[in-house]
Image 1 (tube, protein in one colour):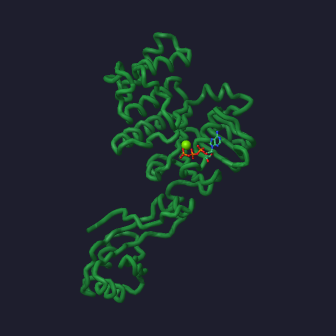
Image 2 (cartoon, protein in one colour; image 1 turned 180 degrees about the vertical axis):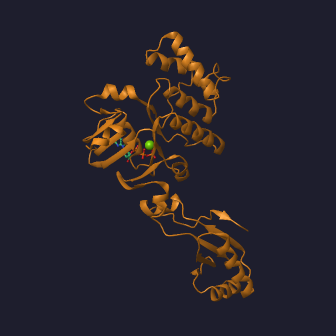
Image 3 (cartoon, protein in one colour; image 1 turned 90 degrees about the horizontal axis):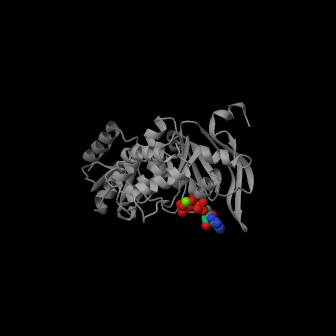
Length: 322
Ligand SMILES: Nc1ncnc2c1ncn2[C@@H]1O[C@H](COP(=O)(O)OP(=O)(O)OP(=O)(O)O)[C@@H](O)[C@H]1O
Ligand SMILES: [Mg+2]
């Protein structure tokens, strides 16, 4: 390991894990500087939870080493546990008791005094907008509230490093944004976050660095911008319902890519106003009208599909201008 490793909140080398003859992790290296957000992005079954479980000492790797919070994962597992908080993919909330009782149980687990436990609990419930619901059974909470409670419980021990396994899966857009805000606040307070997600926009929004995990291997790593540079540029797509108009437009726009089946033309474009206007001018000059015009800028979805080889590479319009 290098001399800078003490500044890394998480440093893992060559993590491997198999179940029977199935290789789940095939040599994973991860380096997360303190105070940053690292997103582990991957489809179902990629191995995300397995990475989180190993780095949080819940299960052991078959091979490889890792330091978390400066402590060796196997030799100093207790010290690692003291430094971290984990919000698992599936809720740790006990639905039969109230939110407050869930929090106080966590405080007990962390050996806080009764008084300190009540103080920390009240503060966190307030911070996560759960104070009003604190005395209601968790079974009455919405998905977003339960997830906020989950994270609040994780923070009882004031961990410097937290693992969030799919923190927003199943949440509605508003709850997702609330969760993102919570994560940003944690990071601005100096906490290191390793999160897993299947949502590319989530990684894009939150992460300093993103690693794409597929079949137990990291197939790419970088900032969102770096990853987006891996895929071909954007384009404007014009769709026609009239085959004759389509043919006319295709003749006028020679450099456009044709999709004869969909009656759609694809023109390489950076999506700027100037380029859009040029396309519209061409159409005007040719005297044809497209039924639909959409602008496609490369995003992490493209990267993801390109790297994980998903079958679904259909064109998703990102912004429809008419
Ligand atoms: N205890 C286990 N025994 C056998 N196989 C396991 C075990 N735990 C995980 N696996 C397998 O390891 C692979 C990776 O699982 P993991 O839960 O890490 O994926 P994931 O990326 O978190 O997926 P998801 O997005 O569905 O949560 C899967 O094929 C899974 O079936
Ligand atoms: Mg998982």
